[in-house]
Image (cartoon, rainbow, N blue to C red; front, top):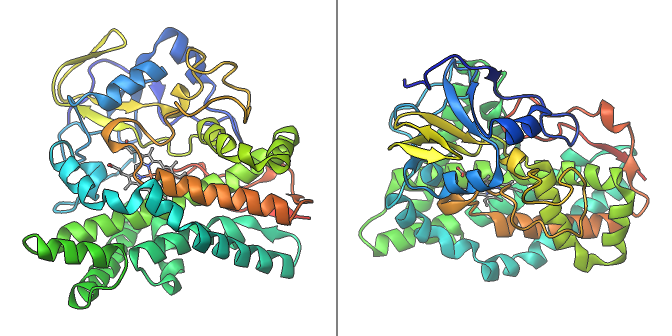
Length: 402
Ligand code: HEM
């Protein structure tokens, strides 16, 4: 394991100023130490990059690798182990393999394909809101809306039976939790892989009309089905496709409820919702640990030499609060132009599901606040259970009433 030499001064992750604020230290880092050393729970020391411009350079430079098996790749969890023979498909790959694999599945996520899903997403959201309105008050918006909508959508897209949702949602949560013991995380991972192995095997025998079925037919026509590839892709899409959007939904609703003047603007003029979503993505930046890389050559970033074999993290939440890139960055303003944020990453690994996430969030916010205009928190924001222990920030529960 290669560590950055010298003694570190800071530990990472640093705590957010709940519920919305990035760690207070990041502002100082941007001003004084834009590329600095941080110590991880695994004991490794890596470089942390905090300015937006430097983050963009880091995430587009091919001399930084995303290969989690490469020596020196940052391990953020105390007893983190690399599982031999398994890769999380795209996010673990570098060019040129990454591009080949991404092109194979890209057509499923174009704006046109995603737009075609809108009527079904609307139907799912309407059914969930019907159930909320027919149910008791207060309602937990995570369980009743934020989690089931993206779970159902990714299940239908991939061809995963939704009746298994409690199984894969709980295993995903366990895998993403920093405070679970290694055995528990490994068990969750193994169970999820077995589940997807069986699913892909069944689809190989009888391809269904869904993303996995279509890929099987495409691979069969082009030289043979690659079972392991399909399993790894299914794993990535299932995990990335529900937990992220669920947390953006619950935190997004909370942020809007806590900023009634901003919420009023989208309720009065839904053409502002898409802009509000970009601002929510910037403001919340939930996938804090997504920008991990290792240098495969010596590279200079922000005036700092990073040597081959040294690990790096792009502090995207910090970049999204960089005053050089956003005016009054700590203000939540849905009318600013926030599209240059890095909440979906940047460069070749930029989120493949971004269009789908935007569509789901747009339909959820527009429909929820239109159909339940008196929606409000049932407990003070400070008392809500925040997911501070997971690598994706979010809420365990969001009790609301109306
Ligand atoms: C990649 C965030 C929703 C699938 C990423 C990355 C980020 C991210 C930051 C970059 C990782 C890196 O640089 O290493 C988010 C957020 C979401 C979201 C904030 C919700 C608001 C989704 C959805 C899907 C998805 C709905 C699937 C349907 C992926 C995939 C990648 C990825 C496949 C890897 C792309 C590649 O390596 O080429 N996401 N994501 N994401 N995301 Fe998302």
